[in-house]
Image (cartoon, rainbow, N blue to C red):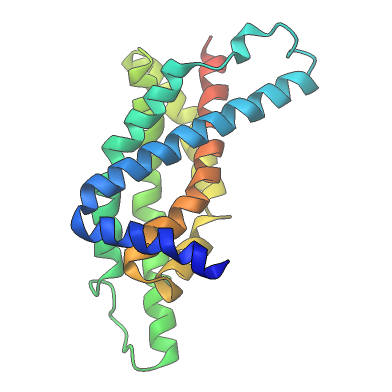
Length: 203
């Protein structure tokens, strides 16, 4: 089964080599769409548990919201891809890489910079764009950021430092987006669910 798994991975790597930006945009659309669908299913389960699911029109699946999620992912795909290419380069390798301690320190620097810079900026973009595309005004967008960004950034420490470390330590550069994409489906489900809760709280 490993051979059968390697076939699509090699095909993806070749596509990414030929047209990296187009490949990243297409991948992001799939990931964000799947994340929105997962968030809808989770929200429906929560509504059922709370006794609100039966006839609960507010939990009805929204293709418009799914398209918004896909658009948010498409716009972010190339900047995120370029960021991780830069992060995976040698710009932050300030310690000697010939020793294990130096490699570990360089890896820790990449993880910390990613968490301190990319994650909060991306989360502000994600929730802000979701609100703006839904027709929210500036005050409503700021309120949504206040409701979502601190919690999402705090929870990101439970997931992304380990993912980033494993990716840079063990995954070939051309397959890092695939590896992160698998995790990102679950993470986008969480972000989309958090966004849906914030949108309901605004009403």
